[in-house]
Image 1 (cartoon, rainbow, N blue to C red):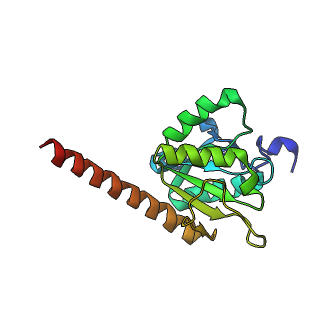
Image 2: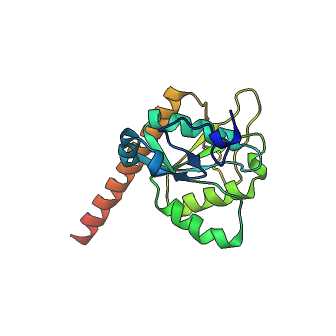
Image 3: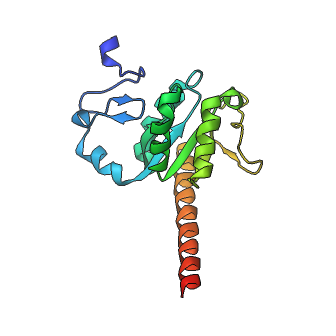
Length: 181
């Protein structure tokens, strides 16, 4: 495989398939089925950009079969990117945080988690490395579980988080309606 056959992140791309570049989908190389998938759950992926880049690639490969589409992801942080990052996080249905060995020391992941909590964006913690001890980002609640990363668990948890968020929104809407009446 040559360097040209790889996307910017090193992810292999097949002819006629999406070339994934850190939160971007090149729609010129995307099939009709993949374009239709954009209506699925929109997810921002938070991960340790210095340690776990290959885990983002793995999640991207599994996203179409798991009921979600990745619309944004972590990037090396700089003060000028904060506003854009806030905008990206505010546009998603939920956030997936891929936990690795060094997650607790990732300032970027902690900041992204804080943004999700402030915006009341539901999130899911995934155990990124089966054979190693993974940690939660700073700011995660003590009762936030880290879920094993298998395709059925990923699919079920994305659906569960979405259902829970919808029911919470509906309950709040009903409370507002009853107060105004």
